[in-house]
Image 1 (cartoon, rainbow, N blue to C red):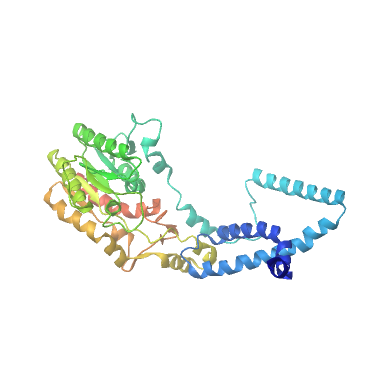
Image 2: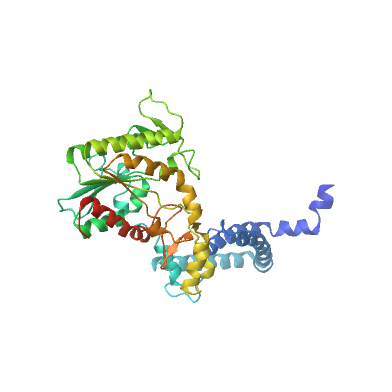
Length: 405
């Protein structure tokens, strides 16, 4: 019954005839759309439009391929069709090789987006100095080389800066500060490491390194006595009660098993208090940065595909439509910032810096400013974002180090 009335119907036969070119076209088209349009998860209109347009266009191109390419080739003499196909493959292969050797086509007759889009994209590329100073435990020189030197390497005054991937984000600002103010900056960092004394993060593959790095820093500063310390972290990411986004982190616990606390927030307070107490006994000033805003999703690159030929102001406005609001950012960070602001005053040598003034306006914490992305992903600053923070960082550090502006 199915064979006679369903599979033998003209529509089923037609689909069967074009099935192979349909298979070839649908994936190529979808991939091409993603290249042109970008990540469309944040744009429902484009997402639904592509769901309709891509299959329809695939069927159309598959039918045209069958009618004007596959069918004529099948009806052509075997030797002739083989020669035509072989010649075509050779021509396409040679053309691809030439384009590859020339590293692309320098002057294209048609561009999907203009050079400003390229500038935006390039602003998300990591600074070479950031790559040089990131996750040193993964490099062959570890453990001998567990920190890198920024700023003025010859300066007598030096500071220790450490933390997770968010201290890495402000490396350009730290390097600039050291060079401008003749301060040697020693920096170390590791992804998803909450380097507070007395606690550890559960669920991490690199937990051994987090514990080792925390020990190295505490012993090193005790012996060498830096002029100041800076500690930066994605504070709320380590608290299951506070974090907003999925992560591999399973929570916090005390290193000493006999210490059992109520929840991650209490462990966080315990670790923070231990850390500040330790540096207080060493009489070393420590500066903690409240966390920068976390955007809602990854960078809205898709906007560049459709708005790049508009004026700079319009393009930036459309990009920043995807920015987190100042209100939402303050709500997200309120609990952890409250903890920081309550505990730090108990320690005279502890300081705190909030960077919202640099990264937010009265309504939003924008994705972009002056033609550059401020974030390379959801929550990590680009070089441009880091340098926006720089004036506030400079003012605070100069006050701690007693350096005149």
